[in-house]
Image (cartoon, rainbow, N blue to C red):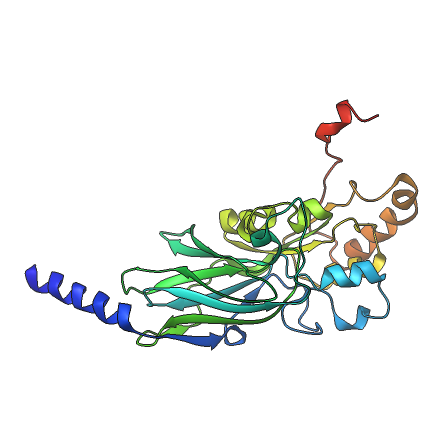
Length: 283
């Protein structure tokens, strides 16, 4: 018993003095993409839409909402270096939610919060969690909700190892595909893991694809084609808070038909309009 305790203390002491070594996250699986044909790795729309989609829709597609890096390590600490596209700031949402990172660890089949990467600006470096026992763990690192990640590296102790995941969780076969508004994109979650699609991904242990576009869920038909290209378990359509009556009359049937034509048996869930809290006063 004393020998084991001594060895544990020795390992912790060695790890504490080890340098952090960074590994490019492109070496590890990325969850949450509807297509791989994007302009850069950490964005959501195919590059073929660059000159086709409306400008605000295309720019929001470059946000990294719903994307997550999956990896495994025995390091006593996990750090990250990342750069964001726009260095956005908003007066109603935390910087961590806008352009930070969120780390979760798999324990007994459940994803538990481990720490956040808090941003300092356009270029960032942060130790997300430290002083852990040197044990193999599975991790899920959620990316920024309202900015685009342009580069990402994961830091571990120099004496530790990092690799791809050893378990297929969240399950990637038959993901859930969501389309919607700022509510779906993640506004105004305090940190990336609190976007509701990311919460559902952890609860269901099933990959979720976030096609939320703040203020721009206007039933653009090219988005229906992107969705139809995914072999999904269910499609969730949550566009009503953005789309007006005329847009719904004009496009909703065609939007649905594009998806249904390729997926005749897949459930399609329509979400109704929320009752906004200010509506009892604002007429």
